[in-house]
Amino acid sequence: MLIELKMTSSDDGKPFGEILKNRGFSRRLVLRMKRTEGGMTRDGITIRTIDRVREGDVIVIKDDDGIHPLRGNTELSVPVLYEDREVVVFGKAAMMPVHPSTKHTDDTLGNYFAVRYPTLTFRPVSRLDRDTTGCVLAAKSQYAAAFLQRGFGKKYLAVCCGVPEEREGIIDAPIAREKDSIITRCVREDGKSSVTKYKVIAENGKYALCEVEPVTGRTHQIRVHFAHIGHPLAGDDLYKGSKEDIRRQALHCCEIRFVSPDDGREHTVVSELPEDMKRLTEL
Image 1 (cartoon, one colour):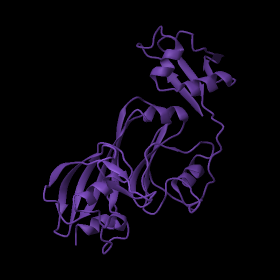
Image 2 (cartoon, rainbow, N blue to C red):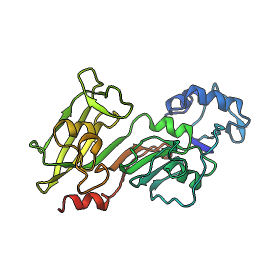
Image 3 (cartoon, rainbow, N blue to C red):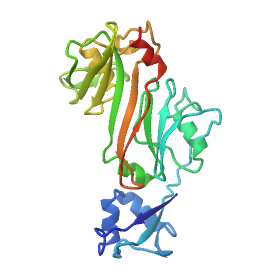
Image 4 (spheres, one colour):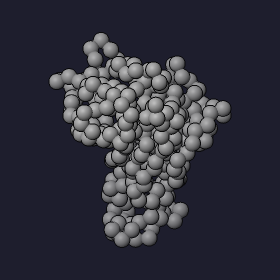
């Protein structure tokens, strides 16, 4: 994959190596590009990291990490919510894992990515549980993945059992792995600091639809925190949520915010609430 870096007035006169560092290129990636013929060029001529750049220069990076793409599955279809030269945001459906595994070899988001981009390596920057729906951000190159890892924000919609007494609040409770389990998490004093903001935006007595923003990013954080306050997510039987009206945890990533390495601008991508979750607050 080719990446074009346009030098701005703030780059003028600086060594190219400094520019690469400021734009999120790892030392490992820069070293590999140095060893690649035509890995870094300006006007078709190789540029070194010690060479100084000028405003208006366009430097072409050849990002080829040699990793083989996943096997594609042409029977899969996943909505693309946003795309540019460096990133793509998918609208993942329920029951679709993000990564292939021994039990899911060809029915994952990675398998669809391989069909859409057969020459690229699958690099999901944000991840969702198999049953959770909504926005998944993926990078099209190692450079874009490193750039996006600097930070991005996510917002969720969750339907919990019952209605929290406090309609808006912050759940601040440390999360740890449940003893003797590789999957289940729990709130425990020796766990890692975990903070979740929430606000009830609709309710019907049986369920409440909540807007949720995880401040930290622990495994199962939203699910564990809502169970901790006595209102597990509907359908989430792992954490004692009722499956009476939905067969999966009622959790949806409705928004993702990020700065794209393609244009340097902040983007907000949204995903509509799926029908199975809409029905819960209409009961």
